[in-house]
Length: 192
Image 1 (cartoon, rainbow, N blue to C red):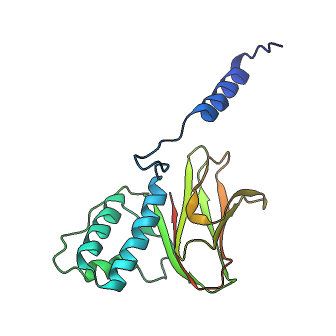
Image 2 (tube, rainbow, N blue to C red):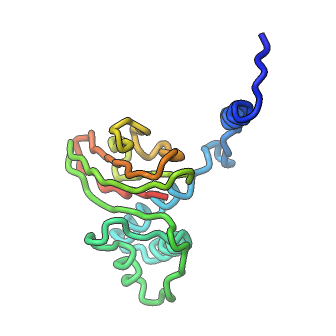
């Protein structure tokens, strides 16, 4: 059976088919290439570990990678770990300037069974990415709901894949992270 699609219907079908057929980029080690949001979450976790270990070289490298991405702290009342890391590197130059509305991040700790919820505005027609990484990694769950409470994305464990979507309407989305493990989780949540 052959179906003829014309106009907007044809464009929609072709767009959907091309998205399904597009191969995921693969690194030399066989893993999928990380999105900018995933890389930032990973770099934030690496900087935190280097800071705690007193490894100034690893901290300097991680802070440099973070500053190149131009993130901003989502929760203005929370202490900014990037400032603390920068202060631990007295030889560091002035901070690099990123995009005006570059990625945002939140850092936190979740007790076993605890959850954190936050609202974030996403713009219509603009691709959105939300990524999370934690220590330990295996028990953090990331869920995103639209304004009507409809589940948009669910990742468990959160670090394995980003939540990527393009909102049809400009609206607030609820981002929820849950620690389903028996140990306290230290996390970074990145919104781009």
